[in-house]
Length: 396
Ligand SMILES: Cc1cc2nc3c(=O)[nH]c(=O)nc-3n(C[C@H](O)[C@H](O)[C@H](O)COP(=O)(O)OP(=O)(O)OC[C@H]3O[C@@H](n4cnc5c(N)ncnc54)[C@H](O)[C@@H]3O)c2cc1C
Image 1 (cartoon, rainbow, N blue to C red):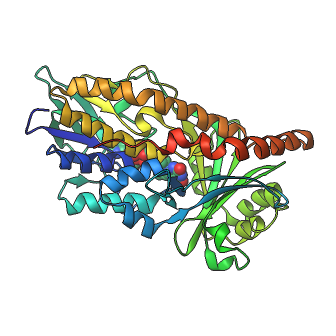
Image 2: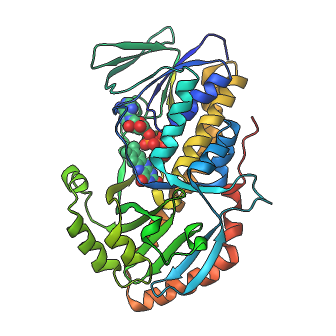
C-alpha cells in the first residue's frame, strides 16, 4: 500500500487494538477512538482458541496472555449427576503451536490497550461518533459530538456488535437476538475447596435436563462460569444492570441447584453476577464500502457459544493488515479480505447458533438422546472436528 497512510479505527476492543498493533508493524499510522471511558470495565470470561493465540504470538503477547489467564487442556462434558460423557482436546501442542487460554475479557482488552499505548498509538476514550463522510478525493472524515474530527485514508469499524460504522456499509442489517440471556461471573478459586486442579484447568461443559452450565479457570486465582437462560425477548438495560444477588441466586438455583458439585457452590458464593443479551449478526451483503471496512463483531458477531468471538476478531486484524501491506490499493486489500474471511467466519456464526440451540432445557427422553449424542459424537469427532478451526495460522 502507498506510504504515509493514516487509518481511523473506531472501537478499542479486541479487533480495534490488535488492528492498530498490526498496522504499526507495517508502517501505517492509526488513531483509535473508543466510545466508553478508560475506567469502564466490562464482560465476563472468554476463551482464546489456539488459532487466536497464534495471532497474539505474532504480536509478541502469547506469553503474557498465558501468564495472565488460564491455559486449558481439555473440554470435559458431563451430565447433571457429574458423570463424564466425553472429552475434547483444546490444547494439543503437537498439532497446534499455542494452547487455548481462558481469561477475563477485560484482562485481554487491558493487555492490548497497554501495548497500544507503549507503541505511542493515539487512543482516545469517550468519543461518540456524530457523522462519517467519504470525500471525492478518497478521504474519510469522522466527526464526534465533542466537535472534534479525524481525517484518514481509510476507516476501520471495529466497534462491535452495535457498530455505527455498519450503517455506512450495510445500513439495513441489524443484530438479531438469539433467544439467549447469558448469565455469567467469576468466583475465587479458594471458595471451591473440593475442586481438583484438573477441573480448574479444563473447560467443563455440564449438560442436564435443565440446560447447560459451564466453568473453567480464568487466571491462577479465579474461576469463570457461565450459563444460558432462554428468553423470548432481550432484557432491558435495567434488567441487565440491576442485579439483586439473592434473586439471581434463586433463579439460577431453581434451574441448576440440583446439578452436581461445584455448580450450586458457584451459584451461591460467586464474587460477581453478570447478564448479557446474546445477539449475533446475520450475514452482511458486503463488509466494506469504498474506504470503510468492518472487522470483528461489527462484521460478523458470533455467539459466545462458538467460543471463537475473540479469536475471529484477532484473525481479522492480522489478515487485513497483511493484505494492506501486500496490495497496492486499499480496495483490492478489502476485496481479498472479504473473499478469504467470509467462508470461515460464516461457518462459525452458524456453528455458534447451533451450539446455543443444544444447550436448552429438555425433557428426560431428549436428555437421554442428548447424552448419547455427546458420548458418541464428541468422543469420536470432537477433537478432530476442531482441527479446521484451531489449525488456522496466517503466514505474516
Ligand atoms: C461490554 C462487552 C462485554 C462483553 N462480554 C463478553 C463476554 O462476557 N463473553 C464473550 O465471549 N464475549 C463478550 N463480549 C464480546 C467479545 O468481546 C467479542 O465478541 C469479541 O471479542 C470480538 O471483538 P471486537 O473487538 O470485534 O468487539 P468488542 O470486543 O465488542 O469491542 C468493540 C469495542 O468498540 C467499542 N464501541 C462500540 N461502539 C462504538 C462506537 N460507536 N464508537 C467507538 N467505539 C465503540 C466498544 O465499547 C468496545 O470497546 C463482550 C463485548 C463487550 C463490548
